[in-house]
Image 1 (cartoon, rainbow, N blue to C red):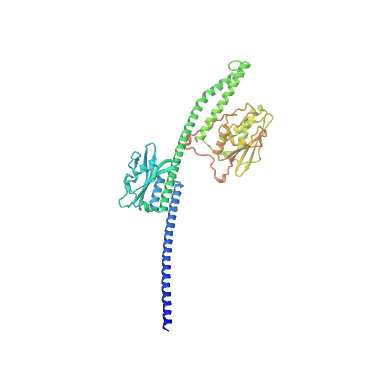
Image 2: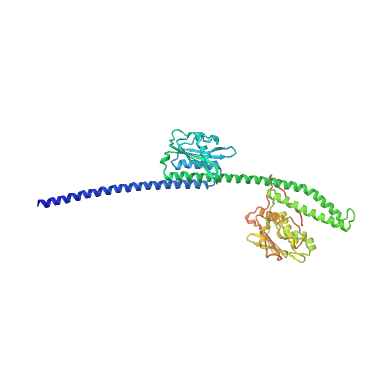
Length: 484
């Protein structure tokens, strides 16, 4: 009986001890698991924060900010506010001065008042750690901001280490970055180090993009200025050339008319060639002067209610003698009714002269030019269709450009010499009227159709028919009509 009790007590004691051991093992494992979960959660949180910071910097760089100083200022403020960085300073490398100019600085707490001052660090200051990092092209760490920044942050800001890195893009130095950290270098986590590395790449790209943008803007401004000077030169030169050429044309015409006495056959041939060349030169000068006026915005547009059919007939009546001389028939198909258009009659007359004149040049004898009108979607379309030389599909895109002459354009009619500026002027005039102009052709030898559209007059919409002349518009001029 006593033996049985002893055995029972033995087994009971061992079972209790085993249970205690198992419970202790389970507690240690659970604590370890919790510790690992906390560690992983902390790493994940730090990783997410790193990615979020890089994403914000990337978004900032891709934003509408274009000034280099403003981008640098926003980036330094973001680094201090979004991370545990104590300070952030970005420098720009100025090659012409062989120095680093501070773009922006941000410190935890209050922005230092002195940050608005211009700070220049010469690359000759070899004792400066930033200069060493930039000249050697390596990342460096320091214990403090001494021997780095000219202006020091408030002593209340605790900095345990400093990250110093050059900024390179396409193997070219564009600046440097200095970041004050609240931890020792050996305490930096993997994600923290990754942030610093990727940060230099992003900031370098952002600064480089802004510099390139500003260079392009400066170049565009210089080109605009040169273009204005070119227009002024063309305008002055054209005015100066027109006077003597007009006089030459007049004297040659009088000679051909026998005003100075009869000319023999050879003399007449020479004078006629000289007269025709002067006419072409005057036309070229007038076209260049018109383009100069259009592109400089000096053309005066007086919108009126215009009967486009009547205006077209006036132009046709003027060119009819030339058409009869060339043996070309010109027909105006007049619809029973058509709304008036909103346009400047002198400008549209110039368009009609150019388009009908082109058709006359490239339509052979016994050919036909048909002018028709269509009312469509609030616009009046005027079509000039001819049975002339036609245009290949791949050549249509070359039209309506300056000096847009097509290869072989004059094979049909060798006398059809032009400047290649007429269609460009037409397009410019129609654009000023907020209309459209285009050409259609089935190919060589199959004729072509030039069409332009103008807004119809709709009284209920309160369209302004004629503008009041302002002081600025008093300086504007009109186009010069060269005739056909």
